[in-house]
Length: 73
Length: 181
Image (tube, rainbow over all chains, first blue to last red):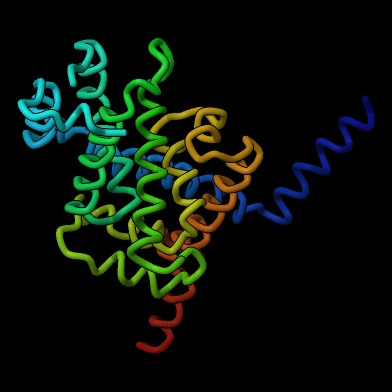
């Protein structure tokens, strides 16, 4: 009990005397980086599916006239 | 080749995410979309290798990732460790997608080694678990974890300079005040 109390106080003292600003700044930055990363990624995701890909899938989906499909290995 | 309609729908709904991943890897819109297109063509070609009921998304990401890596190697020499030079090239590419506000992050991302950037995007943006990311990247889970950690630390280091060093801001003001007075 006493030990824990002491260590808790030491911890507090340590934070006060040696304000772990760097660590806090680090966490803030990490949070910001995470947000920005998802926002940047989400920006592209939100663009949906461009027509060229819909067309591609439609085209690939159609049975081909030629025998190209059959010759692939 | 006739695609199973449910597979086709799943592919279609995977496209926005594939594009975002490709953009993050390439840093160039046109190339990213070409990469996605080639990925889809490969996937359809190899659809027999896909086990129905398993994660199609992860399967497609794997194809994209591997294709990017092999294409990349073909077009350029290994650039993994050439930090600044490669970054400059990525950043100065035209047709960059995305808003200006992400510019700093893009620049910082571009300086990361390829494997770290990939791991960070898969886990931090695509939302894959470490296990899934490991499968996609073809490495151990621990490797993904350490890559993500290193990428985060590196980005924090780079971006913290701009995120506002409050004390130096104060110091700066003090200095300016001093100089003015």
